[in-house]
Length: 443
Image (tube, rainbow, N blue to C red; front, top):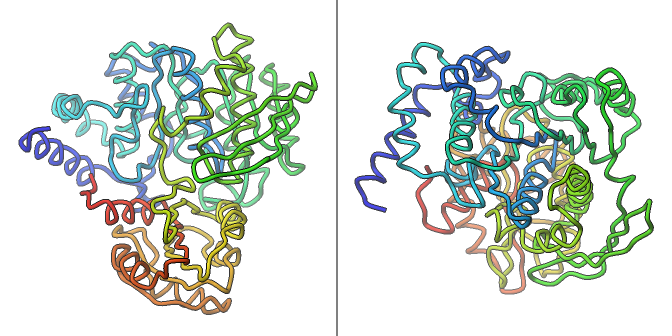
């Protein structure tokens, strides 16, 4: 890529970040409530979201991994597959991919230049523009199908102007309660807003507190509801550096399959069940997503889609792992995996954003690790000193750093050859750590 193109691309992204409210930086103050803006944007673009088939995925945790798994399955089946996820870890282009390849940078430059007047007129958020951009890109590139991940919630999420062929809700747990509701049932109601009349939907995990919500939606909207954990059972057999190996049992048929995946976290078993169920439902609709294709795709999700930051081994010895754990439920799953790591001393670089229940998340961390408290370089980040103060209340001891890079650098300097380092917390902490370790600029 020429330096001139790179500079123009960076200027385009700088314009988007500077001119439009960005949730990742400012939190709920950046949210444009309602779907009016995204509808106006897409109407001006001649409704590109209606020009390709789509699958819609919501949920508190696991929706990014599940989206990538399903995109991998569709790619493996031979479909030109769009994938929209958020936020990005390192590059803006991670949000919008076709067959695992990030969108063309010149296309981004041209799209923004062409529609600046439209942005001034409508005053959309950054997220609304990125969603419209994804829809336009997938339409122009003649995608056969696109997997679309919600940003936050579902009912009022900007992605919710699509009419998908399948909707998926991975799970429900406590997150963004100031926006989505105080109880699991209230949060589920918001996520269930992606369920459409007559369109089948899958729920990854059955929960007593939310079951009635989904039952009522299936009745009122006259659509089939599948619980993934009632369709499939998984048993872990072994794991090596690159893969985990499972036995997958299709419960109704009592059929057993050998399954391996390049996604290493134990928590991925929940997401794999959801992806297996989705592939089966799509196969019943006439898609070429049979079990053989699905198993092949799940063995190489990272290679097919470029998924990062989910129990990602960055270095083997001493061991360095990066995994996003941005709320209590997510952290709990990461810590379950972390407990399995055998090492002399365990080190954890961690940072969160302000609008999370940070104390609840920190309660899941082991007290026998060495902590490096830090904050990402965004206004929404919880200052490292405040994070340390909360941690001290529950007897987690560590050192404070004002940047992620400083924290990672210090942790690496303290690592013995038989030690292990986990980099976790918000997407932005993991993203800045990856930038530092790989010597890249963040765009």
